[in-house]
Length: 82
Image (cartoon, rainbow, N blue to C red; front, side, top):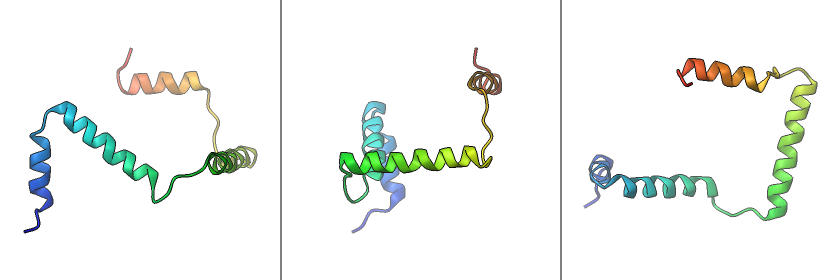
């Protein structure tokens, strides 16, 4: 008989935290891999395309550039981090 997701979740939540962390990591990693692994050349080409897209967005004014220190200060204030 097939188990439902609620039963599986209940069993998983009963596991020790370190075991749940490992399972969560493995599940997330499995989503990132997709159906096939990319070669080094494919990764580099994908990153070159992404960088080019971002440069074009900046040059065309489609994105707002902000000072990193300002952004970090805003996030620290928002989340009350010192």
